[in-house]
Amino acid sequence: MILHTDVTGHGTPLVFLHTGLQTGLTEFEQQADFFKGTHQVIRPDLRGHGSSISDEYENFFEDSAKDLAETIEHLEVGAVHLVGCSLGGIVALFFAKRYPHLIKSVTLSGITPEKPGNWSELHRQDVDMQKGLLENQEACQYFDGLHRSDWRKLIQLGWDEDWYPFQETESFEGIDSPILYMVG
Image (tube, rainbow, N blue to C red; front, side, top):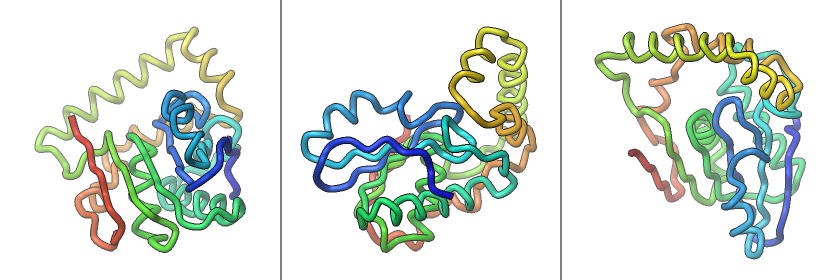
């Protein structure tokens, strides 16, 4: 699937992947403005986000990596510098492992490398927060206006305690390009 994508600037391609429930245009605005003078800044909407319409989320990370590869090939930009945060960081990691020939460097933040011992409790807290979000009419109206797909279905995937791909985040094996991994 070719992703809906905002492209600005000229130069070496730089891809920014947004967090969950955001879009290519709602995040990385300052970074896009900064880099567009020296780079071709590429900000796609991930699958099911913004104007990248899809309600097929069963293999979200795998499919999203494939979507990104198809989008980069469609744009004919070659290898890219890739930046991803949170959900976008996981997609970036999947992409870098499966399409190393399309990577110049990878910058990751907001991902968890290994399953915490208190994962069940942390997960329960996240699910409670997400359910609260779904009860907030103002928030729902905002996200309804932002996304053309069923964003509620995407949230509900995370309610499965085993949704987080720790088997992927625990290693950078297979990535030969430079990696900047930020945690905080």
